[in-house]
Length: 197
Image (cartoon, rainbow, N blue to C red; front, side, top):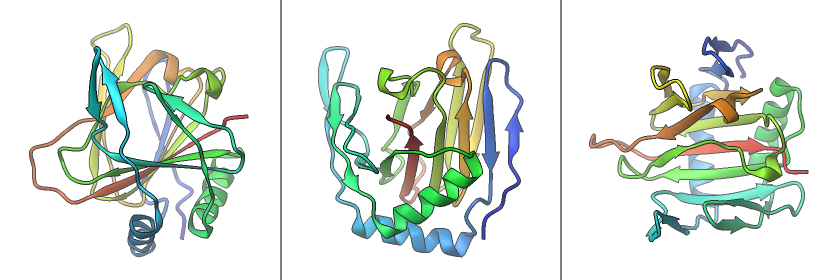
Protein backbone atom coordinates (compact mmCIF):
# COMPACT_ATOMS: atom_id res chain seq x y z
CA UNK A 1 0.00 0.00 0.00
CA UNK A 2 1.40 3.36 -1.02
CA UNK A 3 0.57 6.75 0.40
CA UNK A 4 0.45 9.28 -2.44
CA UNK A 5 0.12 12.15 0.05
CA UNK A 6 3.37 14.09 0.16
CA UNK A 7 4.21 17.05 2.38
CA UNK A 8 6.31 19.83 0.83
CA UNK A 9 9.15 21.28 2.87
CA UNK A 10 8.75 25.02 2.60
CA UNK A 11 12.40 25.98 2.14
CA UNK A 12 13.64 28.81 -0.10
CA UNK A 13 15.54 27.80 -3.26
CA UNK A 14 14.34 24.20 -2.84
CA UNK A 15 11.66 21.86 -4.15
CA UNK A 16 11.45 18.99 -1.63
CA UNK A 17 8.52 16.71 -0.81
CA UNK A 18 8.32 14.06 1.92
CA UNK A 19 6.03 11.00 1.87
CA UNK A 20 6.18 9.54 5.41
CA UNK A 21 4.29 6.28 4.73
CA UNK A 22 5.12 5.63 1.09
CA UNK A 23 5.54 1.90 1.80
CA UNK A 24 3.42 0.39 4.59
CA UNK A 25 5.42 -0.67 7.65
CA UNK A 26 4.99 -4.45 7.34
CA UNK A 27 5.89 -4.46 3.64
CA UNK A 28 8.82 -2.11 4.31
CA UNK A 29 10.19 -4.57 6.88
CA UNK A 30 10.05 -7.41 4.33
CA UNK A 31 11.83 -5.21 1.79
CA UNK A 32 14.54 -4.28 4.31
CA UNK A 33 15.25 -7.96 5.03
CA UNK A 34 15.28 -8.85 1.33
CA UNK A 35 17.67 -6.02 0.44
CA UNK A 36 19.94 -6.86 3.36
CA UNK A 37 20.30 -10.46 2.19
CA UNK A 38 20.33 -10.17 -1.62
CA UNK A 39 22.51 -7.08 -2.14
CA UNK A 40 26.23 -7.53 -2.97
CA UNK A 41 27.35 -4.82 -0.54
CA UNK A 42 30.78 -3.22 -0.97
CA UNK A 43 32.83 -0.74 1.04
CA UNK A 44 34.92 1.62 -1.06
CA UNK A 45 37.70 3.96 0.03
CA UNK A 46 37.10 7.71 -0.21
CA UNK A 47 39.60 10.53 -0.17
CA UNK A 48 38.85 13.44 2.19
CA UNK A 49 41.28 16.34 2.41
CA UNK A 50 44.04 14.20 0.96
CA UNK A 51 43.53 11.26 3.32
CA UNK A 52 42.00 7.91 2.37
CA UNK A 53 39.31 6.36 4.56
CA UNK A 54 36.95 3.41 4.31
CA UNK A 55 33.58 4.86 3.40
CA UNK A 56 31.41 4.86 6.57
CA UNK A 57 28.61 2.79 4.98
CA UNK A 58 28.19 -0.06 2.53
CA UNK A 59 26.92 0.55 -1.00
CA UNK A 60 25.74 -1.14 -4.20
CA UNK A 61 24.70 0.34 -7.57
CA UNK A 62 21.90 -0.94 -9.78
CA UNK A 63 20.62 0.38 -13.09
CA UNK A 64 18.53 -0.22 -16.19
CA UNK A 65 21.52 0.71 -18.35
CA UNK A 66 25.26 0.24 -18.00
CA UNK A 67 26.00 3.88 -17.19
CA UNK A 68 28.55 4.19 -14.40
CA UNK A 69 28.12 6.60 -11.50
CA UNK A 70 31.03 8.53 -10.00
CA UNK A 71 31.29 10.46 -6.74
CA UNK A 72 34.14 11.20 -4.29
CA UNK A 73 36.66 9.58 -6.68
CA UNK A 74 34.62 6.35 -6.68
CA UNK A 75 33.34 4.93 -9.97
CA UNK A 76 30.60 2.31 -9.69
CA UNK A 77 29.26 -0.03 -12.39
CA UNK A 78 25.60 -1.02 -11.99
CA UNK A 79 24.18 -4.49 -11.39
CA UNK A 80 20.98 -5.53 -13.16
CA UNK A 81 17.80 -4.74 -11.21
CA UNK A 82 16.39 -7.49 -9.00
CA UNK A 83 12.60 -8.11 -8.92
CA UNK A 84 12.47 -6.31 -5.55
CA UNK A 85 14.21 -3.22 -6.93
CA UNK A 86 12.22 -3.24 -10.17
CA UNK A 87 8.97 -3.17 -8.19
CA UNK A 88 10.23 -0.27 -6.05
CA UNK A 89 11.42 1.61 -9.13
CA UNK A 90 7.99 1.32 -10.74
CA UNK A 91 6.31 2.71 -7.60
CA UNK A 92 8.75 5.64 -7.32
CA UNK A 93 8.66 6.35 -11.07
CA UNK A 94 4.87 6.58 -10.93
CA UNK A 95 4.85 8.97 -7.97
CA UNK A 96 7.63 11.17 -9.39
CA UNK A 97 6.27 10.98 -12.95
CA UNK A 98 9.70 10.17 -14.32
CA UNK A 99 11.83 7.19 -15.39
CA UNK A 100 14.78 6.72 -13.07
CA UNK A 101 17.72 4.78 -14.53
CA UNK A 102 20.00 4.30 -11.54
CA UNK A 103 19.55 3.19 -7.93
CA UNK A 104 22.31 3.62 -5.34
CA UNK A 105 21.76 1.48 -2.24
CA UNK A 106 23.36 2.55 1.03
CA UNK A 107 23.50 0.37 4.14
CA UNK A 108 24.09 2.30 7.37
CA UNK A 109 24.97 -0.54 9.76
CA UNK A 110 24.75 1.50 12.97
CA UNK A 111 25.06 5.05 14.27
CA UNK A 112 28.74 5.24 13.33
CA UNK A 113 27.87 4.95 9.65
CA UNK A 114 27.07 8.28 8.04
CA UNK A 115 27.19 10.47 4.96
CA UNK A 116 28.87 13.89 5.20
CA UNK A 117 27.73 17.21 3.78
CA UNK A 118 27.29 16.99 0.00
CA UNK A 119 24.94 17.65 -2.91
CA UNK A 120 23.91 15.21 -5.60
CA UNK A 121 25.15 17.49 -8.35
CA UNK A 122 27.55 15.30 -10.33
CA UNK A 123 27.73 16.32 -13.99
CA UNK A 124 26.24 13.04 -15.28
CA UNK A 125 23.01 13.86 -13.40
CA UNK A 126 22.38 16.92 -15.59
CA UNK A 127 20.96 20.32 -14.65
CA UNK A 128 18.47 20.47 -11.78
CA UNK A 129 18.38 16.70 -11.20
CA UNK A 130 15.47 14.95 -9.54
CA UNK A 131 16.63 12.71 -6.69
CA UNK A 132 14.30 10.34 -4.85
CA UNK A 133 15.27 8.59 -1.63
CA UNK A 134 13.53 5.56 -0.07
CA UNK A 135 14.32 4.63 3.56
CA UNK A 136 13.96 1.24 5.26
CA UNK A 137 14.84 0.17 8.79
CA UNK A 138 16.09 2.53 11.50
CA UNK A 139 14.81 6.10 11.25
CA UNK A 140 17.70 8.57 10.84
CA UNK A 141 17.99 12.35 10.90
CA UNK A 142 18.45 14.05 7.51
CA UNK A 143 20.08 17.48 7.77
CA UNK A 144 19.90 20.27 5.19
CA UNK A 145 21.79 23.55 5.05
CA UNK A 146 21.75 26.35 2.49
CA UNK A 147 24.99 26.88 0.58
CA UNK A 148 25.13 30.65 0.98
CA UNK A 149 22.65 31.67 3.71
CA UNK A 150 24.10 30.09 6.85
CA UNK A 151 20.93 30.87 8.81
CA UNK A 152 18.90 28.44 6.67
CA UNK A 153 19.01 24.95 8.16
CA UNK A 154 16.49 22.15 8.45
CA UNK A 155 16.37 18.61 9.81
CA UNK A 156 13.91 15.84 9.16
CA UNK A 157 13.53 12.27 10.44
CA UNK A 158 13.50 9.83 7.52
CA UNK A 159 11.15 7.10 8.71
CA UNK A 160 10.82 3.41 7.85
CA UNK A 161 9.08 3.15 4.46
CA UNK A 162 9.32 6.88 3.69
CA UNK A 163 10.13 8.62 0.40
CA UNK A 164 11.92 11.97 0.04
CA UNK A 165 11.97 13.72 -3.35
CA UNK A 166 14.31 16.61 -4.16
CA UNK A 167 14.18 18.45 -7.47
CA UNK A 168 14.51 21.86 -9.13
CA UNK A 169 17.44 23.93 -7.85
CA UNK A 170 17.73 22.00 -4.57
CA UNK A 171 21.10 20.35 -5.35
CA UNK A 172 22.61 23.67 -6.43
CA UNK A 173 21.39 25.65 -3.43
CA UNK A 174 21.44 23.14 -0.56
CA UNK A 175 23.73 20.54 1.00
CA UNK A 176 22.52 17.50 2.93
CA UNK A 177 23.90 14.79 5.21
CA UNK A 178 23.08 11.77 7.37
CA UNK A 179 25.06 12.55 10.56
CA UNK A 180 26.61 10.07 12.94
CA UNK A 181 24.89 9.36 16.24
CA UNK A 182 26.22 7.92 19.50
CA UNK A 183 22.87 6.27 20.22
CA UNK A 184 22.76 2.46 19.91
CA UNK A 185 20.62 2.07 16.80
CA UNK A 186 19.81 -0.61 14.25
CA UNK A 187 20.64 -0.68 10.56
CA UNK A 188 19.08 1.46 7.83
CA UNK A 189 18.97 0.86 4.08
CA UNK A 190 18.46 3.84 1.82
CA UNK A 191 17.88 3.73 -1.95
CA UNK A 192 18.54 6.89 -3.93
CA UNK A 193 17.07 7.09 -7.43
CA UNK A 194 18.78 9.09 -10.16
CA UNK A 195 18.62 9.62 -13.92
CA UNK A 196 21.88 9.00 -15.80
CA UNK A 197 21.17 9.12 -19.55
